[in-house]
Structures are given as C-alpha cells and as structure tokens.
Length: 210
Ligand code: DX5
Ligand code: ZN
Image 1 (cartoon, protein in one colour):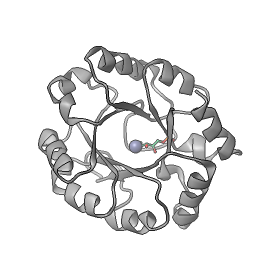
Image 2 (cartoon, rainbow, N blue to C red):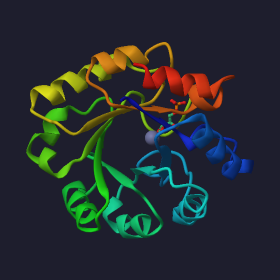
Image 3 (cartoon, rainbow, N blue to C red):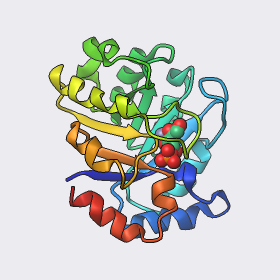
Image 4 (cartoon, rainbow, N blue to C red):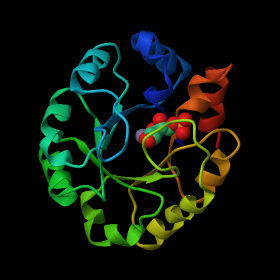
C-alpha cells in the first residue's frame, strides 16, 4: 500500500497538536517533520523538543527529514526525541557516518537527494538506507511546484537494485501522485496538498487506492 506522510511544515503552527490529530484521524501513515538549520537551506523550522511534545500525542510514526549541514551532530537527540525514520541529505557533511549512527541507534535510515543530485552518489551506500527521499523541489519551503524530471530517479534507483522504500517530497498532490507511483514511489509527502485539502479523509483514501 502506498503511504501518505503529511508534512507538518504546512500545518498551522499555532495549533500543531490539533493538526497532528487531524492528520492521524484522516488515516495518514506517518507524519513528516521537516528540520532546517538556516544554513543547508535558508529557513528554520522545528527542533527536537517540538518532536518530543508531538510524539506524546500519537503512535503514528514520525518521518524526520533533516535539512542540516551537519546531521551527524543531531541524530542522537532526534532519535531520543522519538524519530521513527531519520533522513539525512547526501549533500550534507559526513552523511555516511550519520546513516551508520542512525542504524546503530535502532532507527530507520533515510537518505535524501536534492533535485540536481544524481542517485549515482548513493550507489555504494544503498545497503545503509531503508529509504531514499527524492526531493522534487529545492528543499527549504513548502508550496512550490513539483519538478517532474526528479521523479525518474525512482526508476533509476530500482535499476540500481534498491529494494527499500522510495519517498518523494515537494509539490506532491492529487495531480501528480499517480505519476510518482508509476516511477516506483512508495511514500508520498504532502504539505500544502494535505493541509489545504477540504477533505483530507478522502485524500488519504485516494492515496491508499493508488
Ligand atoms: C521542503 C520540505 C517539504 C515541504 C513539502 O523543503 O522538505 O517537506 O513541506 O511541502 P509541499 O507539499 O507544500 O511542497
Ligand atoms: Zn521534507
């Protein structure tokens, strides 16, 4: 079954707890939690204390996307705060060591690539990855248009023999979710499309029927 991971970046920050409950009640499979350092990307979002607070509200897994220059220094604290999946960027420093550490901590590993980064950089490290997160926009902000050329990396990953989960993030919604799945994608991150939806229950059902 295709999984839906609503991105809390598009939720109302003044009532995050209620937004988490809304996503869980709609039937989402995970909650996507974007972490930015104002350096790897030009924006700031949530820290580990917010994750720990939201984690108390639900058993739904938290899919933590670290957009950090130095993820290795932060994986322990995010694991302790309740991350169920920890994804680091292949463009970040020491990403291989970060993946090894995440695995040591007993958390699911993910690696992400920006739209302009080839999946070739992952070839020798795929054994360390439970999941690959393909960015379909430049990371940093929600509400951007999806870059369709980034989706074909799903097929390239399968051609490299990757059997783990493939996730896409950025501009994903009803208009392009079938195309993502046709390219081998298993997990759909949706920020604007989910939290802006008039009927999130129906949207989750549509994803699960893909
Ligand atoms: C962007 C974030 C995304 C973002 C997606 O850097 O990684 O998770 O919230 O938002 P939408 O779905 O609005 O593009
Ligand atoms: Zn993200």
